[in-house]
Amino acid sequence: MNLSPTAPGIFSMNQNGAGQGAILIGNDDIIAAQTGSVPGRVCRPAKPGEVLVIYATGLGPVTPTFPSGLAPLVGGAPLPVMVNKPQVRIGEQLIPPENVEYAGLAPMSVGIYQVNVKLPDNVPTGNAVSLNFTTFEGQASNTVTIAINP
Image 1 (cartoon, rainbow, N blue to C red):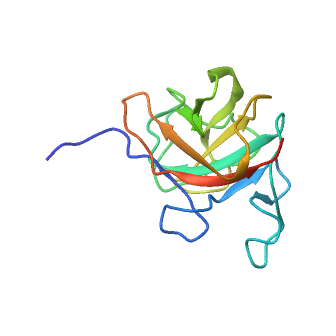
Image 2 (cartoon, rainbow, N blue to C red; image 1 turned 60 degrees about the vertical axis):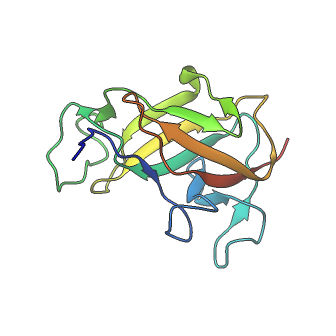
């Protein structure tokens, strides 16, 4: 049996790890999807320059270390950040590391990571653009899709 320190998984809207990603635009609770495509949720395509908030699991160690089973709180101590940020790929484009603005534990959530990515000006566009991660250890995540308009 092979063990790995990471086993990345990006959350999807249908909860099976494929299709539309459960990915927000900034802190607005708006899903980066075609308008009207997710019943009961506000959706619109993301745009270059905006920040995506991606939720995932299994991304590996954080610093400072944080006890399992607890949720990091907002305020007070700094949020635990990943020791090694994941590589983010949107479409066929590897996103520059400096565009990964935050990668660490999601505040107020147990076992959930949050990765904030600023979309570069030349990001691929479309209604179902692929998005995935690769960890520092070389483990690839599932692939989900998002909508991006120019």
